[in-house]
Amino acid sequence: MERLVLLVGLVHVLLVSTMEVNCANILFSGLFGEGSHFLSQVPIARSLAQKGHNITLFISEEFSHRAENPAYAGFHFETFSIPGHPGLIRRTTENTARVAFGKTTSVIQNLELLPDNLFMTKEACRAVLSDTSLMDRLKEIDMIVFDVTWPCGIYMKSYLLRHMNASSIRVAVTSPMSPLQYVHEIAGSPFNPSYQPTLAVGFSASMSFGQRLGNAINWALIHFLGKHYVFDCFSDFKEEFDLDSDLAMSSSFYYKYIDLYLMNIDFAVEFPFPLMPNIIAVGGLTSGPAKPLSEDLEKFMQSSGEDGVVLFSLGTSVSTFASTRSDLMEMFFDAFSRIPQKVIMQLKGPHDYKVPPNVKTLPWIPQNDLLGHSKTRVFMYQGGNNGFQEALYHGVPLVVIPFQSDQPDVAARVVSRGLGVKLNKKLLSADLIHQKLSEVIQNSSYSTTAKRLSAIFRDRPMRPADRAAFWIEHVLKHGGEYMQSPAHELSFIQYHLIDVVLFIIAIIVVIFYLLYRICKCCKSCCFNKSKVAKSKVH
Image (cartoon, rainbow, N blue to C red):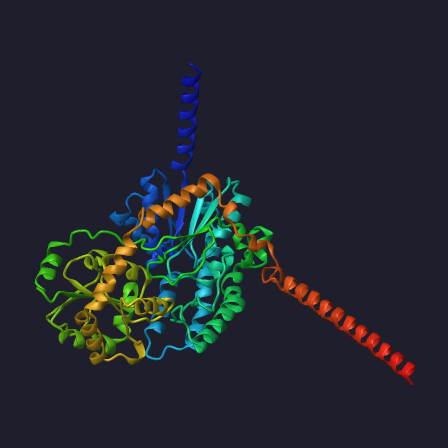
């Protein structure tokens, strides 16, 4: 009888704990709802939904078409708008893409974009916090998963806890790109610029002296200027919305609000570096087995014969590229017309380009499914992290044309690992495009390396999305405080052992000083004795 009671009690505890996890309300904020930042969060949300969680995707009304897409039918959507600034997000992102695709993009031009981007992200967050009806609907949220480039989720948590009587809210951050220095710093994880490339430098882990110098300067700029300028601009929300006092100081206190960091990287191709336990590598979120193609696409693929197909995409900004760089579009079409392979390329909207007969243009392409097709020979694209990992999953070599953000960093990994080649956007020509495509297609070493690294990449106990979902559930059950780095409790002097080094130097100085005094004293004694002995002789 006692065993039966014990068994019933154990089953009850297990059921209660399971229900506690399976009924969580989780909010996903994937940078307004557009682009790779949103798309990399969806697989995690889908995995959690399959486990019984209630998932809400939080997006701007500018991308409200997402809610009508059958692919997201299992999710609930919440939208926000920015009063007085209709279309602000689209205009800002299109302007950023326009500069990136420009003929003479410079550091100055990118810095000039910063105020507009900061205005957009800050006004978007202000609009969210000002919408009391929206915040009231979100007060039952158990966890917020937000994209690293828009930290509004931290301020939402503070607002909900202080003003909406919300219960404990857990927070996770997703980083869809190459390792970001400030993510490491906020998480309390070490970042060493002597072998860890910083954002957008395009270096490998093996840097020359000049590269290490440039990397160190970029690290300092991001650490002392970038983080303060980009994140601390939200600090006045503390007074405006009566938030926690820590949020009025600096982003250095973000760690108090974040339980988990999910980084879309995999060490099959990533340059090795140490991680704290609260940073989880979940690279390959959008990659997976290929689904069957439509009848039309399958027919086109098969018609390529033994030569196969080249897949060409410039990501979500392709329409901006096509409308602003007609000269480059003509170069690509010229190069494609010279190769025996057929080409599938993404090209949105009406255009006047003369498309070669071996090229098929589509407004949208099922990228992962095409990469997984046996006829695909090479993937030419702009260097996005999702596309990199999808190509890696399917063992397809790459030709990368980096334009902005972390794309030079992805290109560095592609070249360093022998997965393909890089094209400089400032030196593009039809001849060079044709040459590099032919090189990757004809040199079997790229395909061999891609397949070898693909085998490493795919040899894992669970899918990346399921791994991310596991850790989110873990944090929901147990919290993330126990994984936080003790580095947060140390001052700059303590963290870098400056006080210890100074103490050791002081001890050494004292020891040498004492030795000096002893030697001097001994010398003096010996000299006096010698003097006395001489006087006696005389």
